Image (cartoon, rainbow, N blue to C red; front, top):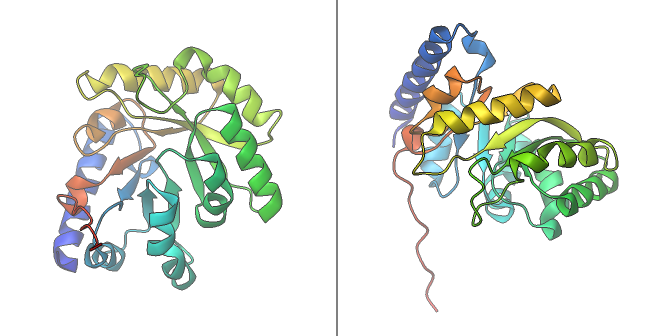
Length: 230
């Protein structure tokens, strides 16, 4: 994928975000496009950077370390957001690399992040991931337990919780889940809503999304890593 192709894709996405925001009576500048770069080849990442994209989302700490550690030194304006589940034993690595952790979903992780931030001297903004569909196989705190986790994160752990994140069930209308997340955030006085992906980001913008996480609609179909020889 060429730089021009990526630039066209980014411009088209921003135009759609702007239209959705204006339809909802919102300022388009209040919505940030997060490029989901997981499992993308190097040429696509470089093309996105050359096209001016600076906010990226990654799912796995180890993969992100290999991709971004050197690029961060060369581009201090990069913002990296962890949008995937985080194991507690990776908390310190995540705090060292990322600028925002979007997937805080349990007390044990909140405590591990607090310890990692104290040890590294880095204080990151965090989001609480809410399992709005209450799916047993999916990460995220249950909606009814969100306030309790928020109180623990901000009180006992001293984390800077800026907002909420969700990934709606595939088979359900996303608007219901975006509305639920927006309501939870409003109750807690939180300004950031990370919701909406390639297929539904325009709906998310209409429900108040401040960050939309777009991968396929920006980069094209993901390229799965090839197995290595034994």
